[in-house]
Image (cartoon, rainbow, N blue to C red; front, side, top):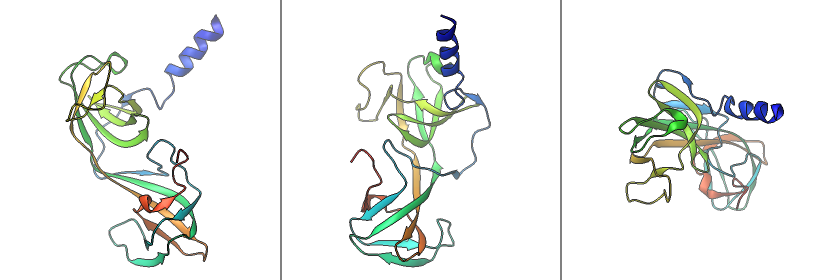
Length: 184
């Protein structure tokens, strides 16, 4: 019995799941080493079509190479940039986070399976459970609906790629690769 209690406390005290006091993030919010969706994986990818690589993900970027269709590459890391967080209004109490109807949740990087980084009422949580959020068109939530999406986030995911020739560069064209999603 004591082991079960300790295990439950460990789950509750997981820092990624436990909200902690924090100021609202300044924008743009940059998350390094990012792979922002369920099944996301860094490693060997193959181009589905030509991809332009840039010197950096920053604004001072310049083209460095174009990778042709069918070429294997190595994805090294990713940067997720949130220019504007999603805006979510609580419609029913969310006891796990102490939220009540009318409270606002601001969503940042997507983690996958309905989880995302979030800020609300002076708290930050790395893996907010958004399974109860209804989309503006009414889709998304089927039971225990407790919030509604008012405004989607504006984000970019930049991936650092190394070609077989040794050229390194950045791209946002993740949809032009096979291999980035372990669930494909």
